[in-house]
Amino acid sequence: MGDLVSTVAVAAGLFAGTNVDDLVVLTVLFLSANALGRPRPWQIWTGQYLGVGALVAISAVAALGLTVVPDRWVGLAGLVPFAMGVRGLVKAVRGGDGEGPVIAAGLAAIVGVTVANGADNISVYTPLFRTIGVGDSLVTVSVFAVGVAVWCVAARRLGSHKKIIAVVERWGHWIVPVVFMTIGAVILVESGLFG
Image (tube, rainbow, N blue to C red; front, side, top):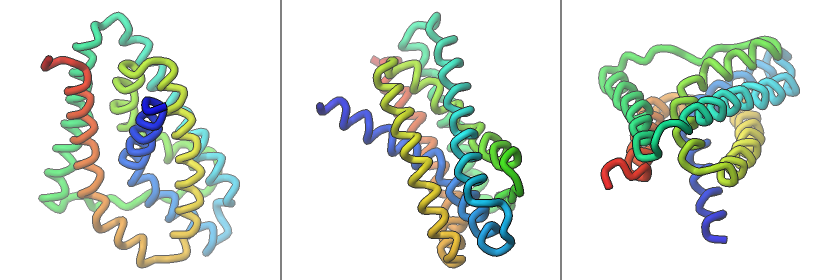
């Protein structure tokens, strides 16, 4: 039972950490839905599920491709999210991240924004799926499905509070890099590469 709780906790933390920026995008989409009537809430929900599903599927296929690589060397893939975190931290220190969230109007655009916004998540999910096995991967995917629903509900509520968006936008550029660096370090250590 302890392993299941641990897997759920790690999956929930991983989803939250890798999708902080997605919460901002979803909130802006719900703000747009409230103010302009576009996109429709069902399009946001469906687009989010399809986009995250695509990211998970790509990661799972990539993880299967890594089965020919010894487990301890798979840990080197942890350098990718770690490096991305360092890059994000450097951008945050320099203050150069002036890109705002993209607003999409229809289902296909929302799927596209979700995939584009979360494309960097593939570099985190792939080594994780490769190292945790099929059972824990299925639990992780289930937690991600619940996470999408939680994100949509939270974003819909946040979509009516512009001050909250300002706080997330203000600190998100610091939170995301630190989370990516932590995930990369965990992948490196847990792979047994240094053992």
